[in-house]
Length: 207
Ligand code: IMP
Image (cartoon, rainbow, N blue to C red; front, top):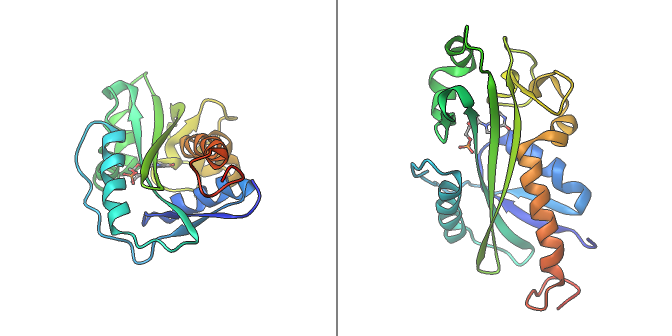
């Protein structure tokens, strides 16, 4: 992709920042975290895209962009349990804070259907326009908490494409092979490569 591109990621979640940096580094894209983080109230909606779109609008209007920054990025993600028709989904953060992963395991005790997925929507504001990219990772909920890496529900999620370890038992670069976030970020990279070539872009060879 040539010269380094910098994107401002508006999140206070250090795990998300580390993953985005790892996923985008090979493509010459650097992630800077926004500091201080603008206060962004998250709206309630059953749709991750609606939440991400609202966050992006607030983040973009709050951010003072220097010329070295290509765009502003936000993310909304959730953990979806098939047995509960997707719950906690958009309420994942609240359920994590209240029940915790041990509470989730307790609620699934004796239940056969342990299918789950992580879903992620990345929203990027570039040149006055908003773009959205999605990624999903399917898997199952483990019987017990396993591993110390990652964050959130990682210690109880076993991706179907993996080798039976939970995300929290994997190194960051291993989680990146399967993760919902890495998939959404890859979709963003493909878009960016095309966008930089487009005649309306001021940032690439096409300008
Ligand atoms: P947020 O609203 O996008 O911050 O995400 C909601 C919640 O989903 C987070 O607080 C985490 O508990 C959970 N979550 C999102 N992505 C991941 C992940 O990659 N691993 C584990 N938990 C995650």
